Image 1 (cartoon, rainbow, N blue to C red):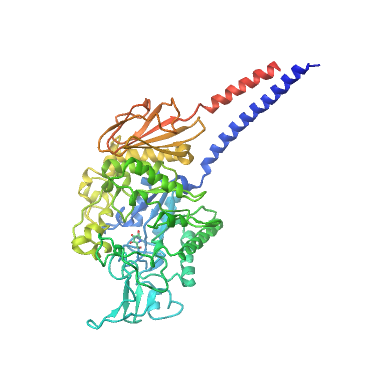
Image 2: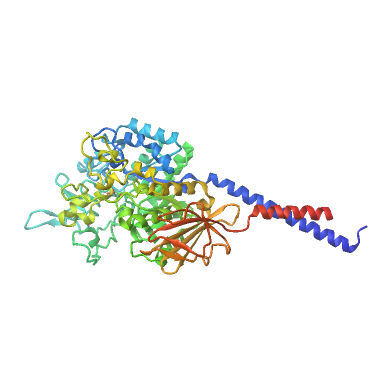
Amino acid sequence: MPTNDSRTLHLSIDSLNMRIVGVILATLLAQQASAQLADVDWWKTTTFYQVYPRSFKDSNANGIGDLEGITLKLDHFVDIGIGGVWLSPVFKSPMKDFGYDVSDFREIDPIFGTMADFEELAQGCKDRGLKLVLDFVPNHSSDEHVWFNKSIAREDPYTDYYTWRDPKGINETSGEPIPPNNWLSVFGGSAWEYNEEREQFYLHQFVAGQPDLNYRNPLVVTEMEDILRFWMDKGADGFRLDAIPHLMEDQTFPDEPPSNDPEFTPDQWGSLSHIYTADLPELYPIIYGFRKVVDEKQEELGRQMVMMVEAYTSLENTMKYYGEGDVKGAHFPFNFEFITNVNNETTASELKEIIDRWQNALPSGAWSNWVIGNHDRTRVASRFGRDFSIAAITMGQLLPGTAITYNGEEINMEDTWISWADTVDPQGCQAGPEFYEKFSRDPVRTPYQWDDSVYAGFTIPDSEKPWLPVNGNYEELNLAAQKQEENSPYAIYKKLTAMRKDMNAVKSGQLGTSTVGENIFVFTRYLQSADEKSVLVVVNLAENEVNADLTGVPTLRSGAMITYHVGVNSSYTAGQELSPSSVNVPARGSLVFLYTNAASTTVLASLLLVFSVILSLLH
Ligand code: NOJ
């Protein structure tokens, strides 16, 4: 019979054993949970790569890129580690806004190829495990769309497919009809165009060749939802939704008040405050409806789809695109913070604030994303300079959420100066020779620089001249050259996309942001599990090298050593271990380190196991 004392000892040994078993089970469960990360939805962990089809690769020597060209280059996407290809519009179009004016939403424009070319591209993507995302342009069609022609003729049910208004009167001097109100087009000038045949004005928030569809008409909504279904059946894995804040307008058509922004002349869009033509509350349910269609098709086809929204608007409005309560909206609205809020004057603390503000604004359960550039905005290398552009790309790849790259960013392509004579972008043309450089988007859309051959390998030497000039720097700045260099932007980009694929810290680690001194912004993506590496990113906002002591970074375990992984102009070599107490961060550069956040749980679990065995033996 055991004594009371020994019974107490047995009981406490038993409860200790139970606790140890509990710890071991918890450790095993934690390991199991991280193994499941491989199943996280593809659109969350991948990088989307925006292809501007006219400028990517020309397969038929007419100076304009096409679908077959993209198919020829599919291995490039695999090589640089991206998982989703997002194509700017390839649908039938008179090209007044280079494809964003669609005259048949179900056809491929002959300039880009045929439906068979599209199917070949979709199959090529599938074979390589790549997802294919299309640009969906719901706000407007082309003025050459059959719906518009029938609408002009008041042929039902098309009569109200667009927004038509009577003239406000007739100008006594010119005898011209007066537009219904003062609304302006995003591209400048009145947003109203008079149609002689219908004797009414129609609304166009972009060029006159892009009449706005009328989303107050349920038939229009149904038509557009059917188009989404059509392309998912054809193999699309989702959509980027274009110009969404412009979807609806105030139905009383009042004048908009001036913005009083001295930067804009009275006929420029920025001169008005767009309280009646943008961000109307009625538009969000339309987007939620699109999501429902996408989800239904996803169910039917057994393929996970994605829906991303383009909306330049306030943070508060942006967040509404995620949905409301149980009603789902976009998988994510684009996060344009790096385009609209970060600039060359941004300080370390401002950068931290911008990033924290976005992350904190996310509704519960919402997935983040980071857009670095696109076909509408100055290229990142021209916005931030050749070094800080890579720092921006590094942040975009390693901050929590989906990463979005515009073609050419992976080799740090720059804007190309385009003369007024060569300007073709409607936004540039409409601004006139005096202002076109401020507005034209041609500089960011020039041909991709594949190699140092004539036309940078975009097309063949005796082809027609490319539709936009190739950047003069192509002989040194091109993909083929960067493949030979160890620390080229291309090499850095590949290392970053590999981290997104391989590291759980990047897929699901917590985010910690901090600043060190005036110029250093730091963020960590850390895991509590110590068997896996956490990530430390150090960004220098100053024009000079800074020696930083990172030991105070709150999410860096005290005593942890850091291992250099990748960076810009770094004095460290990959794999080099150093103390965080003295880190040289190059001017306008970024450095990425790996570190272990806590003592290894495997070691801990093994120790506990040994301890428990000893205790049982004693027992
Ligand atoms: C946004 C697109 O990104 C831009 O290129 C286009 O001109 C407008 N929407 C109009 O569709």
